Image (cartoon, rainbow, N blue to C red; front, side):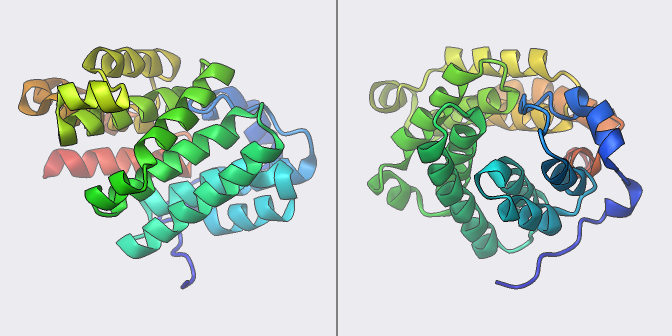
Amino acid sequence: MTAWLPCPYAADYRFDGERVRAQWSALHAVDDEPPPDSDALLQAWVLFHSGQFEQATDAGLALGIDGLSVANRATAAYAALVEPHEPTRIELFRRVHARACAHAAQRPQQPSAWYWQGDALARYANGIHVARARAQGLGPQVRAALEATLALDPNHAYAHVALATFQASVIDKVGPLVGAMTYGAHAAAVHRHLDHAQRLAPDSPAVLHECANALLLLEGEARLAEATRLLEHAARLTARDAVERLWVELARARLTL
């Protein structure tokens, strides 16, 4: 695999350990990640929030099981927001999923292990042919991992959004009847999870952007005005780190299409 591209906004966000610790609650409203318990882990998160995704991944992996949360979040952020080539994105999400499975096997009580397992698998499935994803039975695996995340941590905003998006995607692809009978996907649950995510992280451009996506998947033009409102909110936010800046810029780009 080729070297990772740099985050275009890394120079605008210079973090150190003290600043990350001071802003931890705001920076991690989306994933409810506990504060790091070692200087090495803190430094890996410093690299992540500064937009140095490859370095943050390497630093996290060097810490073994203790660094998998930051390694997986950094890899996923790079794959979703920076990497331009679809095959490379799919491969990166496959790696996140594999690492998260190992993480959950060793630490089944850690919500992030289940979350990255479900989120990465959902994004991997979206990148391959629908029939292939269904044949591999990926849908139930995604749902089980995300539900496990929320059972361990009901305040995991990203997991609420991911589960809502999964159910909206299922309904979009197979319809509400088959979606409900085969995958347990319900429109009411989509809205419930989206509302909960926005209550947990009302100023997260990532949450707002992905909530807009889920609404459009679920109801299309009927929710265009609401989705646009969410994107406009995201586009107006002042980013707290390089990752949020990427989401803000993505929302702004969506609004100009």
